[in-house]
Amino acid sequence: MDEVDKKFKDFINLLEERTIHPIDNTDIKESCTATLLLLFAAVDSLSKITCSDKEFALYKENRGSNSLRFTGFLDKFMCNKYAIYKDPIYSLRNDMVHTGINTKVILTKSQHLEKHLQFVDEYLWINTNQFLDDFKKTIEKIKNNIDEQGKIYQNAKKRLKGINIIEVDEQNETPRPSPGPNDSFY
Image: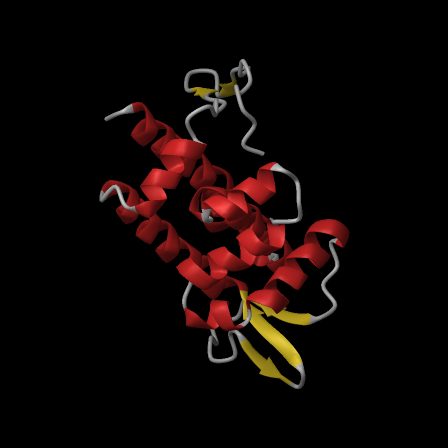
């Protein structure tokens, strides 16, 4: 396994440990807001290694590419309905990340999935359990692309190269300080 493969696996493992596993294994899943906040953070992170070189350059220059990256991720990697509703989902992301308040979308965690990503009475419905399941499938697709050394692998190779991921001491379960990245990913 080369350095990029290891960094990518460490990156994905950390992302899953800090977002997917807490949602699946704690009471976080009971809160639609908390679930989406973690999922939106994960989409933001993954969009940095999956976006085009042009979008990444805009991000590095701090020129408003968050929208391009986030909606591009929904468009390219999540199912068709996410592509259709990428703009309202991004608007929801902004509302929730910046204010913690959702005013434009109806959130549900019910097992009735038929309204997921549909407008009902002028409001977009999002089922957070379905969003989580769809995101897990997307992560698997991205892992497969990395294994096949496809386009995402090429992006990850360039973008994760100088990143130092903080590791956790398995015996003490405490984070070890990172010397800091040569080039900031975030």
